[in-house]
Length: 171
Image (tube, rainbow, N blue to C red):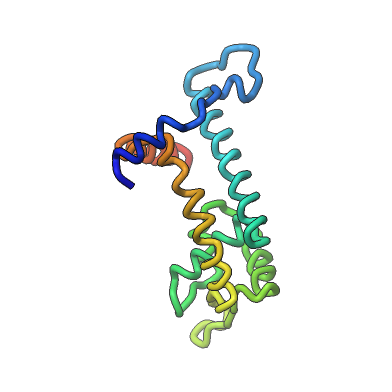
């Protein structure tokens, strides 16, 4: 997107309410750091809820299921072992095996026990799963592009840098 188009879109972005207003906070926050963390958490919840609604409407799929399918699509034809899928997920979940069970039941993934190590199960996205991802790509791309309406490239890079630094504090 051109800088001029991004500038036009940015001016049309909705006016944001403060996290204090969102939470109907009547007293000041204990610190600026507390306000910042709460702002990140409220924003994360807002993003997750919106993506949940959009994925459910477009493909009757959860964020976690979608995340697994995208991980497996990226892994290619060889697929990935279950534990590696768990390590790559955006949201850590202890129930990866149950999540994979549901995806397999829907026909979106295939699992095969490794010939070299019978304890290891490799997972691959199925044709049906790839078709679903192709259908959802436009929905998710539109969701992913929303920050372009509020930030220019330099601001997005700075946001990424700050979130990377914050995440490093909470391993």
